[in-house]
Image (cartoon, rainbow, N blue to C red; front, side, top):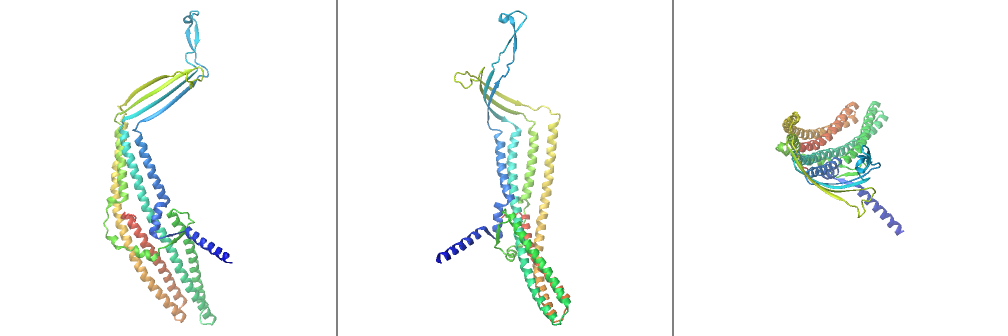
Length: 447
């Protein structure tokens, strides 16, 4: 018996541990930190940086020594015939003798070393590779900021659905109690059937909203898992509450924080775009410069009427060649000039775009501050209105059961209460979401 109890205990304890391992307990900050490492977009952005580093090295190797080996084998299935005057071989003058000069099989092996000495396009390419790497790094930084905002919104949506469910369940229980009491009063002939039916309608609507909120909670958890980079079936346990997050995200000091547009990631990306356009123009200009390269070649060839090339007695004949190549662009019918002019126009456009980004970012920061301040004000107002709506609804309940007011008066008070409850919950989410938006607008670092 003891063994049986011990086995049940071990099984239960092991099951609890496995269940805990499958669950992921996360505060909002832990969710952000986790998503920065595991979010799908962030993983791709990190891979793009690795690709940019490989591309940078790929460009660098163009100016480094290049060694290539080559092996040619030829077999004349039917040898080419040449004709010699017959008298050279003691034959009749005026006639020709067919002869073959080339052996049936030949083989040639060679190694060539090439080295780029000067090319303006290569120098520009090296600078462009660095710029491309910088673009990838900035793209990852922007992706991380977007991930932070997405996780905050997804995390907040889960908490909102949970709080909404809690409120609706409370409303349902109160309505069921009121309906039960009203039915008893109606059975005693002290109220009208209309009052019972009115409460039944309200209860049905609340239950529908409750069922919908439960479905939305199911979806909200899946959306959070996607934002985190998890499987949508991953079990999550959120350790932060909506009330605590509203309290921690109410920070009026952000409204007075100075905004430096030069540090914003979008402005840095606009500057990098301008730099890439400058390099493209420089590339077109460099194509008018001469290019110089050199090579040295070493090889050996041999021939035979049979395949004896790997025999030790096979004789090979060495050769070697050194060369220098200078390419000087002279005239392109103004083609290079047109390409350079077009690249210059693109550079000027990037300057205009950079200034546009500057102005938009300044406006975005001011707008985000205003929206954040409004969200806090709306939250305070919604909190007060909710308290008022709760007191009004309770008074109407008392009046209704005392026969002083009608079911329509109670319905109006209940609808007002439900509306204020919804506004209150949404105002809490807005405080959290607008703060995340403001942090991105001010380009605040991820904590």
